[in-house]
Amino acid sequence: MATTLNFPDALTRSAPALELPSWKRRSRTSYAIDFLDPARTYTGNTPRTGAMGGTESSVVLLAEALAARGHDVRVFNGVAGPQRMFGVAYLPMTDTGRQTRGDIGISVAAPKVFWNTSFRVPVLWLHNPLKGFRQIRKGAVLPMLKARPHFVLLGDYHGRKVPRWLPSGGRSIIHHGIADAFRREVPAEAAPPPCAIFTSQPYRGLDWLLDLWPEVRARVPHARFDVFAPKAHQANANAAKRALDGVSFRGSIARGALVQELAGARIQFIPGHRDETYCLAAAEAVASGVPVVTLGAGSLSERVRDGKTGFVVKDRDEFIGRSAALLSDDALWTRMHRACLADDALVTWDARAAEWEALFERLATQAS
Image (cartoon, rainbow, N blue to C red):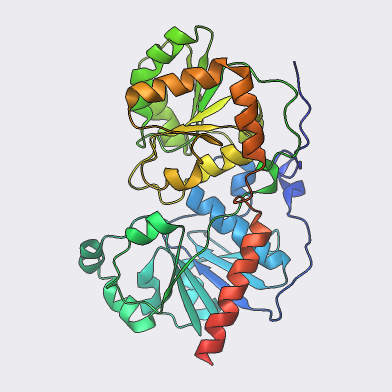
């Protein structure tokens, strides 16, 4: 049965129409906020027109949410020239010396940018585990010592993977938000066909999943497994893998198209990985009403509520059994689908932007 979804259509329209709603600004103070991301190249159009990794999309969505709340936001990255879209200015990293404002500086996991910049409130927004010896080898510790940035982490697991001895001005945990388009509001009238989906980084368990898939399909003969990749080169590598019955390598797609794919999926496979410090793919699946089956590695045990929004399993055999059950038992799926939609831990980027504002106000008061 076809089901009409009450998704906000922000991520399903053509690029110019995707701008976030104009929320009223709630912060007492308007800040000049500079994001610095020297390792990547993107703008606000990138998630609207193509595939995008979780770090980049998080920067875009937080920047736009802060701009919509009345702040002056700039993102410095690998763009060739200045561009302005959806309320945010994108500028080349080479312009940081002339164009940063010295107010709020958010380094996107790149502490060395603080060596040649100065901010009243320096923040290091980390997205992956941080190994101390690597930071020493890369020359990143001295810039941390100079700036003493406040570390923003994504969860308790992430916090355990960032050494306490690294120089900082303190630590806070702020989770990622969920784009409105992924937040399904109306439960499905009926369980969808038995389709599993994988939308994470391929190195985070895809080969393991492909190895066990024939056993899942032996229990659910008509099941299919659709594999997507966040980046084009990963999609090309996936396409070269051995073909299996029921498996389709669907390539790399824009986030608006991903919303529609999740709408038709029954479960999300994400085994987990030690590098997984938040797993936006799992959070977006749950917000879309799609239960997740995982080994709980990395932060996945923080994203999935075992027995409610999915299953956190202990081994391969249980992974196969739980997956087959969700693919075939309509009553089980419906119960978990509704629990996913009721998960109040997943909030909008506007709500997360309010948490960032509170952090800015606290740190600015301490700096004054």
